[in-house]
Length: 615
Image (cartoon, rainbow, N blue to C red; front, top):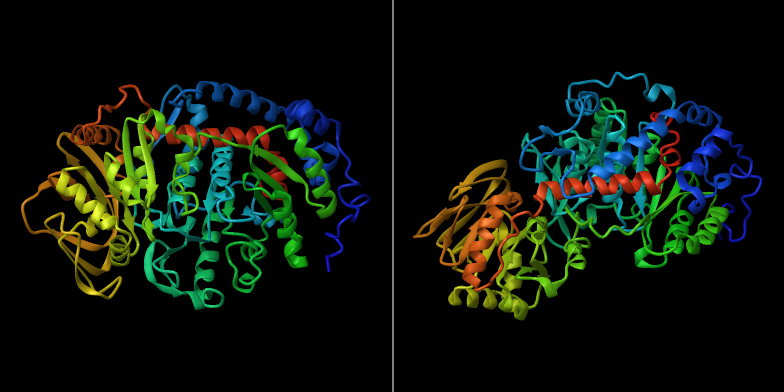
């Protein structure tokens, strides 16, 4: 039986929404912001109490000034470069500024310099009874939570708010190494860049890296910490929850606002009792919750309604707003559904985000990996790259820099015929090297790779992919299989060690400097003749390296791809004025932030938090 709040046809009239009084300043603000295209009528959308209404009126002039400044900033960022550029995951956190005044940079520096031993001392805090953060939950994986958090972090950082991202637990094989050697999820690294702060382990205290369908490797505060079996997932994570809650408090004591990202769906009722990343976190830390739905999948109203309907009463009270993502079309067609869902659930909509075709970098999980393929036109491709879709593919984001090059078409595939026809075949990283090597043999892909090597067609192996290209692999650690044969395409022996290598690396290929990072148990020993390639080696047209992120170095990437194109008989050459990869990332982040400002009511989204009066 439906709870009374959710029973179809139950009226919200006379409830909190129906009784809301709106000040003249608020009505004017809504009119300026949304005009005739408002997707949320002012009489329905506000959940702010009288205190917030007064604060909103007082800050109206400041908001107008900021909107004007943001529009000017957006125009200056319309191209491939931005007026403020930042480091990428290889270069630390130094700010590089251009055409930006000292006054504009001060709040950014304050946020960036907020180190682990710096307490937060601004005149707001948990003692005010307001929340130190907000949780962005989603109706499913790949609903867009990571990108929404990224956009919010940048939008708030541009306003001078000291903001930090947080994901209590991330299950992903896409990760990055911080400057202190801590390993965190790739998405949280990007979100920290968006917030203009130094990435650290507290932002992703628990990282689970699936090694099989029944076992995940635990990374706790950036370091390996055993494994988690599938049977332990529901009730064997108490120590992980404790570490996650402690990490949240560390951040909350140093930053004004924590933008938390949920995992999967908050309505996974089979896991609720031990949850610490969705509503378990929200309950423990008093966080308002925003539920995000992906309309591109279809059924967004049912997924939003069903999510709320499955929650317990105390959890349901935490849901403060809905948000729809990836909308294409006329919002007016959607508006009746928004109003009806709000009437049935008493949860207002904070906004409808449009489909953003140029946002695809740094995918977090396997559902999103290769999302950039939808943005490419294979008819214009001059260089075809086939990336093997390994079952336990890790750090697939390595090939995003290749895909960003104009005229390079990258396809993630498991088809040996596609691999055979490509100009370049890439074996990406793997969280289970020996198991994925067995899969290559069963699928026919191993034969396709060996045939390419015999024909002199380019092959690249990165980390786990490099290990598979070796002559032999000795693995008593990850698979327990001991000594096995590799593909035998490089004169290398791989020996797995218990200690995991986590470090930033700097080197060169020919005259090109390269900065990268390493995440591996396998140690490569070159035992025969082969040309040096970064930390690894090359023989004929087979290349191997342990380094992740190497192809984000623009000059190196373009020079190496040019050599590959020549070997493959392709006429492709890099465009001399193509934007740098780091600039494209910054453009993406700013695009997300602009969308948050334009299409989302940030006052509603962050009402009840300790920065609400400053929006």
